Image 1 (cartoon, rainbow, N blue to C red):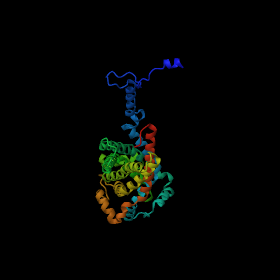
Image 2 (image 1 turned 60 degrees about the vertical axis):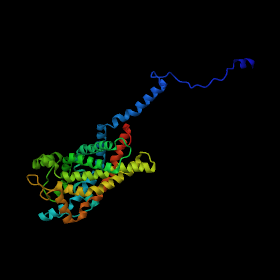
Image 3 (image 1 turned 180 degrees about the vertical axis):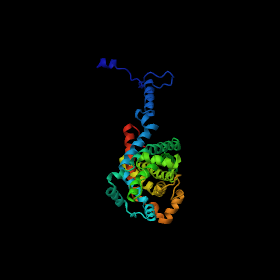
Image 4 (image 1 turned 30 degrees about the vertical axis):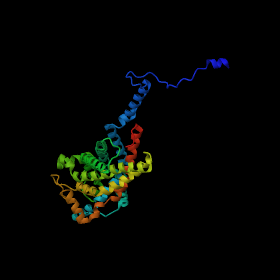
Length: 356
């Protein structure tokens, strides 16, 4: 006991144990500084995020996701195009003494195509549609993403009007660049209908359609109907991109849900509904202007332009003729948006990118 008491030292004030300090004399431990610098580098340059958020990676993901969505929903697009052209086809048949075309609804049109032309005809024109998405979907996503970053200017909040400007700009630019492929697609989609009406086929494939369009109207002929096409795309992307982006962040903020599939489903359904409502009138005008016969100089024989087509359609068939094909447009846009955004988000997530 006495030995133990003799060896007991007075209590010393506690001093925190520190490692060697930095050479700068700040007193910051060298080990902690190294750790902090390593953490900062990790946060600023995540290995997976570096390439997944790049321009070309985003572009390729967009094209791949759009190709999946287009292939799955293409029969609805073909049905929509046939419905939109019914009134015009009926008038043409009556004027030429040809077989009268009956008005049919969405299901009757789809079943009629299968019965009269074969089930595979539901995918007639899908090749130029996929070509179109190589340009259209890639450009619209990377353009919207770039405009969104620019307009945000480092802020987390993204005002609705800014999102609308980005959506309109991205959609209009993408569609103008992709208009030639869209024109070829519409021509191929209508060939089955022309044969049933007793008319001579105009084209026999995507390459032939492209050559015929250039032969009749020159390079500029590839952009026939591009004005209503661009207008439609601007409205559709205002509905799709802006609605998806806005609804997604509102849902996450109000409900506390993480960036998950449930949020993607809700956002994409809302995006499809708004896009169909805003884009269908311009889609009807675009389809009719693109599908009309042309003279040897590539000038339209039915309409002088988009405004003339709009006036004639309303004057002869009423305002709601502009919403012909709305149901298949909506029914197509809902699963298209759902398939596209789920594929897009899932691929980005698997590559290490955060939620869009």
